[in-house]
Amino acid sequence: MSPNQTRPLPRVLVNSLPKSGTHLLLQMILGIPGMIITPAWIIEDKDLDLINSGSVGPGHLVHSAERAQLLKQKDIKVIFISRDLRDVAVSLVHFVMLNKWGNHPWTPYLKNLKTHDERLLAMINGVHLTKEEQAEYHMTNIPNIKQFSEDKLGWLHQPGICTVTFEELVSDEDSQNQSIMRILDYLWEDLKDLHLTKFELLQKIKQNIVPENSGTFRKGRIGDWKHEFTETHKEAFKKVAGELLIQLGYEKDNNW
Image (cartoon, rainbow, N blue to C red; front, side, top):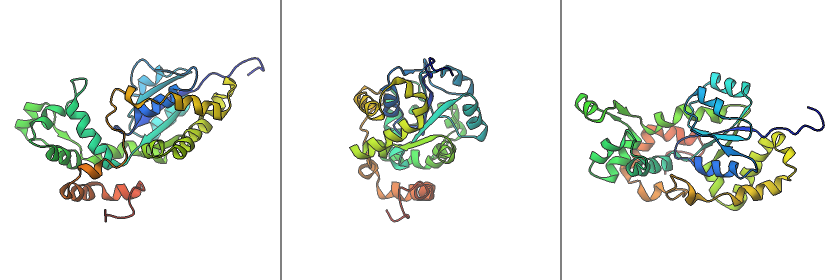
């Protein structure tokens, strides 16, 4: 690169466990001057071609070594966000029931359940539909919360990407600042030619955070599960994903 050439802005994939703060993280990246969003979500590998220099694409891509290698070959920077799976389950129920875009495949089945508690339990335990139900609802099953999450959580152990948690981004200002600085450090080689300091970029990013502008924003709180889980939900969750919760660092044991 000659001295007069400017380095192009990064290609960024905001990859996430669904209901973990995808839109919040997107707003942050779009606070970087010159960054724009891709025209569509990144659903499969061919969609990665939508991520040009200076653009950020949102996705919920499953982890694999092959996909990680492909992203590296395409020089796409990956920022992965995850969240307490208990809050993911709660957020998921509300998201499916709201059915904002009118096409969520789980909505008809969940609506047929009588209570919110039953629906939340279905999100935790998963559902295997009978043949009759399959014909009625046009699907075979709903994964349990571990199955729903595990294939994406592999990104947490992938070298060369940046990982953040929803909790780090919303718990307090210091934590948020530290997380944003970690993201800026990760992207820094491609941001130098903006001729802004990291602190100036931090301010621009923070100014662009308006949760209410997100299409899926509901509460955006930490620990909402404490208000919605009954003892039945707790026991079911511990059985299905208690160990995973410990591995992710959200609990030390199953005594919660």
